[in-house]
Image 1: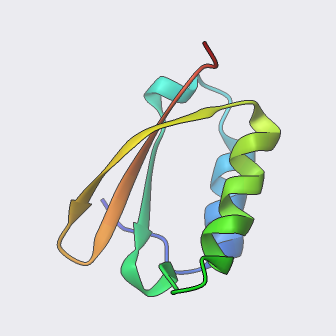
Image 2: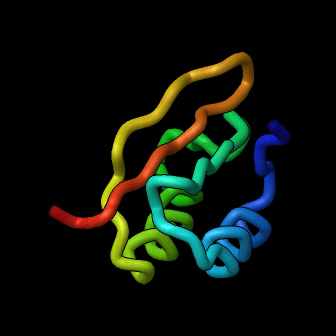
Amino acid sequence: MTPFDDIDEARQAIEANRGPPEAFLLPISDVLQDPIGLSMAVITDAILAKGWDLDGFEQRNGYRVYRYKSPE
């Protein structure tokens, strides 16, 4: 799994996904985990536009893998 280290590439992957959120994993490099959260805010906007909810994440060596789910 190759983590995204570019905001636009992560956003494009989200927008291009046609499957259910439960089948989508989003690996985000730690370089995008800025202290203010600006990078993740842009990525989260794309997730919210799909109508998905966060279902947690797993911290790995140098990146996080985010999971999503359908709204309850």
